[in-house]
Length: 125
Image (cartoon, rainbow, N blue to C red; front, side, top):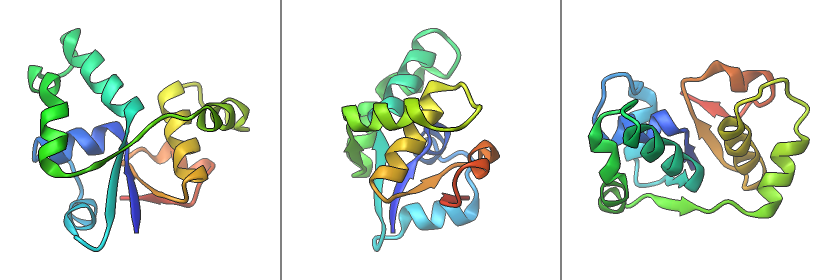
């Protein structure tokens, strides 16, 4: 399975947070799965940490991600166009980008956020 981690799933995985579901943790740690994070999630988490909305540990996410061996999924123009055209009344641009990336790249989105259920059956938690 190809997994794309939502921002909170990425942060909770790297910080060993108990809010990460057992099912999600098992899938992320399973060597049979390919685990990706979006450049959008990295931006969101470091931005929030720099403004005091997340622990300062989030500022060293690039190093933590590299150590974990997760692959980066860059943001392509096709992802952005798809995100902008989504027929979805959800205004969070980061969620829209993640959904577009997961859809276009045939990935399963690992997220606790049920807002994705309205437009995708590919949410895993």
